[in-house]
Image 1 (cartoon, rainbow, N blue to C red):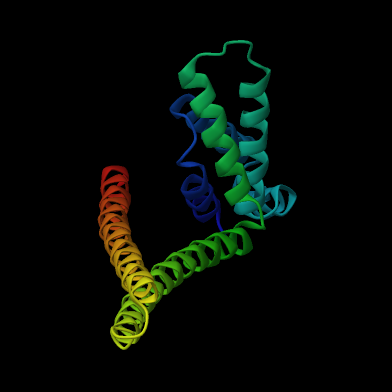
Image 2: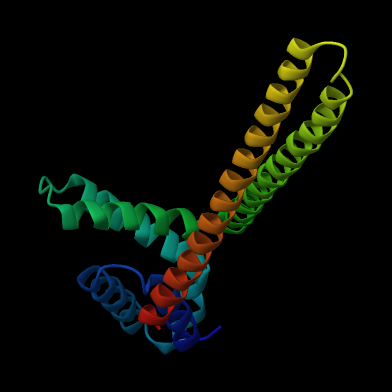
Length: 195
């Protein structure tokens, strides 16, 4: 690895830093390479370690600097939160954490879809039970009017409950679909703004 390759890779990892910290870190490394000279370039690269480790150390130092600053403005808080997240993803554990986050999101989506599917099945079961109960209550026409009235009332209750559950599940499904589309648009907009 040459000096320019090392600095280019370091630059890639440090891009998300605040502008002044980013320039300060890159200037330091450029000066460090300049003082060592071209003949000691490989020794300097060995001393510094790989660019990802160096970037992780720089991000941790910048985060420490911002945490030590007594200024507590919303911008400073946002910078600290952003640097904390950036330091987590610059660490060697970034890939497993990202994978776990993606799997967690997929599991939550599957859980939500399963709950909505179960609500549809429950609503359909309520409507079917209403039909069976109504049929059974109609068989009691001659024998017991109070039992027939109770059967018809139960059928109406099951039908109304099943229909209500079906309507609520449909509304939740529509809202979830719109929220998911809005989230994807927001992510793509954020990604487009950063590029």
